[in-house]
Image 1 (tube, protein in one colour):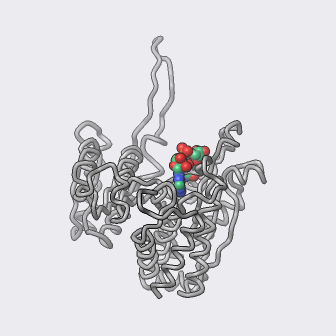
Image 2: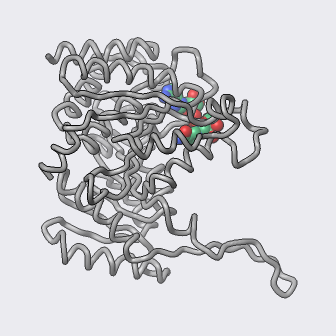
Image 3: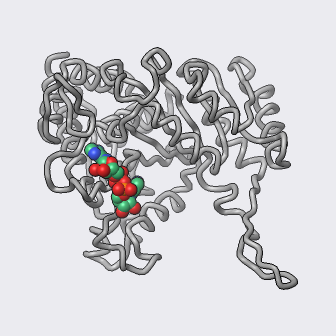
Length: 377
Ligand code: NAD
């Protein structure tokens, strides 16, 4: 591990920044300031290159991401993406729509593990629709398998058989596909609460029986020191709103992960606060793990260009990058604490505004984070 880290440090840390569309460039502008501040004051040594993705790329090149940009993403140590999309590109052919750029990056970097933290900041506890006593201190990490399962399984289609129309998809997982995403979950748990809940529906699905079997064996072989529990997906959705504090890391397939991560996200009550990471497999030679970090929210065309967007989801995505791509735990902790402090001081962008708080703009929130970092020394 130490040797891998040294390999990364000896090369400059290269970040490819893809601001994208709508509020993407605005929120990314604030993160750029934080990166510059950290380079200056904490010697983080990041070299940042910017490029186009989504509608912005379509306007310039006629496609949602170019081959050159994909190659740059593959060569970078990490990618930070803003958001893509907007009504301006609604009439564009499907394969060139802004979202296609995002999907291609995920596919070409083989980002199979999607990390979605659901964290409730004390200062925002009232933003949740759940009672404060249920969500206080909540800190869950959902690891969703992202590149296989029912969204990709073959055969799939809509067909007529004997005069009756059918629609079908195929939920299919190989043993290595389950092992690699479960490994990510166990490794993460070791750095957190040391507990993994594996979620499937082995009561009614063969693929669920298989998933449970593979995770159980991997646990026994390699991660016996981590607590492992199993849960059916329907029960998990109930437990997430009944008693979310019981969870540390949840690992699940593409479909259940899609649904459960949105459910967990809403426990926190604020789309503008939610970061995410997507990770690939470690290259055995370079030790590098392909990774893309992005806020959960979209391009918010309704507020784009108005200096109203909350940049904190993207700031926190950068913090995940510090933690997971560069092992810079101190810098990540410091940035997370700066965000906590800014919120504790009552500063709010419009999306998280409440009575008695101080309304700030996108750049005002960026100013406040930098000021807080300065104050923390
Ligand atoms: P959205 O997340 O862009 O916006 C939903 C609502 O939340 C809007 O009212 C918006 O103003 C608000 N919001 C979102 N992020 C915010 C922030 N940081 N600060 C303050 N308010 C914020 O979702 P949508 O409206 O369904 O989609 C808009 C466009 O974004 C579409 O083109 C969609 O395809 C795209 N999209 C992209 C991504 C991505 O790039 N990963 C994800 C979701 C949607």
